[in-house]
Amino acid sequence: MHVRKTSCKTPLRSIGDSLSARGVSRRSFLKLCTTMASLLALPTSAVPRIAAALEQAKRPSVIWLSFQECTGCTESLTRSHAHPLEDLILHLISLDYHHKLQAASGEAAEEARLAAMEDNAGNYLAIVDGAVPGPSANPGFSTVAGHSNDQRLLETVADAAGVIAVGTCAAFGGLPQASPNPTGACAVMDLVTDKPVVNLPGCPPIPAVITGALVHYLAYGAFPELDDEGRPIAFYGDSIHDHCNRREHFDRRRFANSFDDEGAKAGWCLCKLGCRGPTTHNACATLQWNDGTSWPVGSGHPCLGCSEPGFWDRDRFYVSRGGCARR
Image (tube, rainbow, N blue to C red; front, side, top):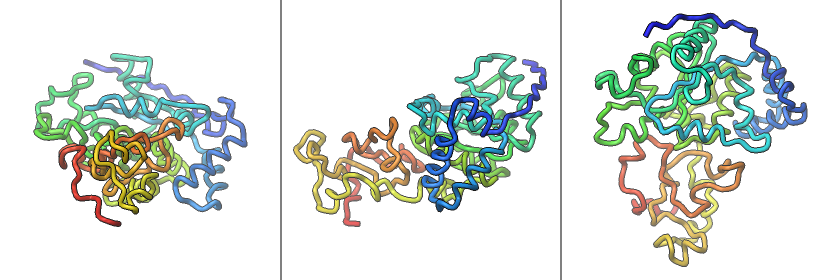
């Protein structure tokens, strides 16, 4: 399919102007900055800098690519409540291309992507959700506009300022990479080696984590400090176990032995039911879900370790793996 690049250069408003136009008050804006500083483990002295940077910064062009995925990452992002952080993410950026959220389709959609790349060369961000079929696999496993996913990824990130791999599939290969991995699915960082890549794993990821990574980039011109797996330490530095609301029961050696025994009903530790909290790093226990309502372990389900590499193939779910030693 021949796609004609059509320039769509328009002055991007600053983030401050965009938020004001959406009715976000100065008080709410400063509250956002304070919250983000806290989530990123920054001192309160960083709040004025974040506020000043966000007020003046232009909304960066973002091209969002989706490959082998279930749409859960986008669904998580769009589950907004009354002025939550995830609701503000779409006002911090100029989302110029997204399969599921854009109105355009076909050639018009491709024109928008190519125009955004040309008009913002060197300055746009590429966000990717979903694993990428490996270059050695049959490209017919997944194509967009007649191009294999790996070709499309490398073309799009060529002039990007940075790349954000959203969700475990993009960050580590996720479920598509599970054995026997017929598509040769791989992580974004396996293919993109010449650009800064930040991984935000989770199945799906926590929306506030996505916002936090963006806010840090907008305020400081760089992604936050990352761990050895390319994840922001501010969100993935501690294990689920460190902040689990069932930790007291773990320390007292009180474990549920089945999902319907008295221990489970009393909220005891789920370690013997296969909880991977001690070896999983994420902010689920502190940020929680649905506007801070709950999270899987709080609802009675063991942590499956979805924000760790290879979580699907490591071993069987709901079976203790000896992770109940006193810590």
